[in-house]
Length: 263
Length: 263
Image (cartoon, rainbow over all chains, first blue to last red):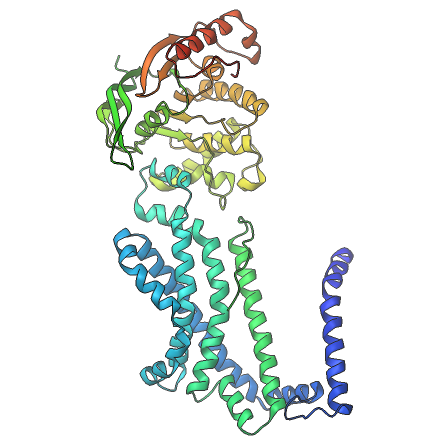
């Protein structure tokens, strides 16, 4: 226990110390260095905004909206990505036919569809859910395809020599074998759903942290904008570690895969 | 008495990428009686793995007749259990769950299969390792799990494709003694593919000698060595004489290049 605590402390103190140092310098710069609070407000002011926001319940409400949109989009992206990947991988003809379109669609910045998606699905949460899901769908699909293609032939032989059905082969070998790949896609997707949610809110929404940022920006309440950005950073980290914990649970048997860049 | 495995005039032609046709097997005939331990030895690339894959039901397009327990074989059979060169365990399954895999695929009664899996794990010397993951087991232990898995659905025939080829020499010797014991204890008919003459002579009642291009059986050697056999039998003059006889046969076929002392 004592050993573990020391270990955690050894991991934590360098980034924590660094953060304190930067915040201290920033605070000093804001108070005595003549930094314009409209450009770069003091950390104290940002924390004050966070306190106010949470005290009034405003931040919780909008955080809840953004988070639900992102999570719904995440779930849809995973289901659709793995499902479509499984369907496409099950048929070489489908794979050959669809591959150029997948590449074209993957290369397109899906975020550019935001205005269109708002027109299609309105100002409520569903347009944001759809946008988040569409953006996050592709990394999951592509990694699922990669994973399903990479099944070790020896593992397949074991199942085939038992006369296993296609469904059994998929469930007992192909899908679990593909999971390490799929998780690298999910790691990207979890960042993308937050991105899709916020950008969707910028383009058109009634609630959510994105709308709060726009409002704060319009009123030149820079400290407020910063406080929301800080929330988003923490939220992103929580989601990232959530996926990491899930990976740990499901992929206890796999060697860690180096994470691809997340944007 | 009809043999358990009967192969008549088995030929197999592979098309190559250039559109040529390579004859992998040419009119192979062999019989294996119930309870017999038969090995097939030959140089690399002689087509012996093709023979095994046909018997395992993994290759269905061949010419000639192959039957197991009197039934023509054109696909996987429940009467056959296969151990491949690599253990091919599912890394996400414990040793026990890996042994249970055929029971799940074949829809056997779980309770009975579990008891049998437990017995088999004990028989292969892995009592107490039921809940270990493959990554926690040594190469030899993984291959023991693979042997137990191949036997869990109680097939009449155990097929082994160079099962210890990936193991170091000392582990390999130990595993051969173990295999001899397991074959006797389980009273299975065993068909072993190997390129190690010594291994074949140590384990088998009969050794089929195969030559390459095209693969055919050039000689059937009755093994004079008494059972049970321990490792000290390799000092027996009859052992050395049998090994030498097979070595000469292979050399005469010109398929092995210069005589070697390996195995």
